Amino acid sequence: MSNSTTVQSVDRAIAILEILAREGATRVTDLAVELDVHKSTAFRLLAALEQGGLVEQSGDRGRYRLGFGVVRLAGAATAQLDLSREGREVCLRLAEEVGETVNIAVPQDGDTVNISQVRGPAAISGHNWVGQRTPSHATSSGKVLLAFGALRLAGELERYTPRTVTSPAGLGLEEIRRRGWAATVEELEVGLNAVAAPIRGADGSVVAAVSASGPSYRLTPERLPEVGELLAAGAREISQRIGYYR
Image (cartoon, rainbow, N blue to C red; front, side, top):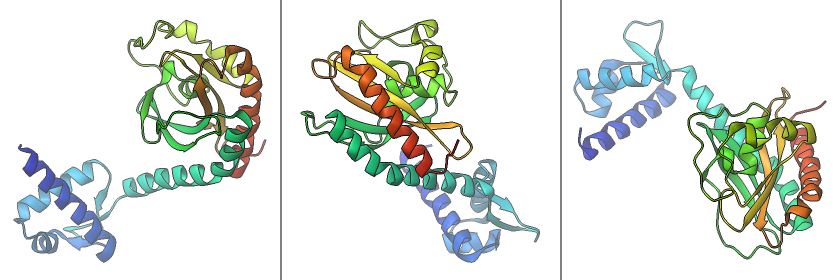
C-alpha cells in the first residue's frame, strides 16, 4: 500500500468517526454515500476500526456506532490534560526553588513521555522535552515509574553514556521505593543530572513522575537528596490535586 493510499484510508477512518459522533448509529450504505466510496470500502474501514474498539455494531442490523475504545482514548487524553493543568502551579514553584527545568512525565509503551515543562531561572538550555519519549532505565522519571510498577522493563537495556545502568539489578528500584525519589547522574546525556518523584492517581497507583534536571556542575550529586525531598513534597501536592488522598 502506497503512502498516499494509507493517508487516504486514515482520512476516511477519521471521517467515519466524525460522522458517527455527529449522527449516532449509522448504516454502512449511508457512510459509503457520505464518504463517496464503495460499500465494500466502508466495510473494510469499519472492520479495522471495530478491531481497535473504536466502533461497534449497534442493535439495529447493519448500523455502526462509536465504541468504548473512543471513551478510553478520550479518558487518557483528559487525564493527561488534567495532570498537566493541575501540576502547573506546583511545577512553577519547584522550578523556582530548585532553579532547574521541571517536567511531568507519564508512561507510554515501555518508555516515558514528557507532557509538561517549566524552565527554572538558572536554566541555560532551550531544549524542549515536551512530547519526547525517553528510555525508562536511563531517566529519573523512568526509574520512578519502573520502581512503582507503572512501567516494566522489556528487552536489553541500551547504553547511552559510560554511566548508563544496563543491569536491572543495578537500577536500585527497591531503594527508590524506600526513599520516595530516583536520580540519574549523567546516565542519559553526559553532563546532565536529574531527580524525580512519583505522582499518584485517585486510586493510589503511580501514574506519572515529576522531575528536575540540570547540568551536572550545578545539580551535583550532593544536591540530589535535598532536591529529591522537594520533588517528593511537590509530587504529593500534585497527587492531591488530581484526587489522591491517603
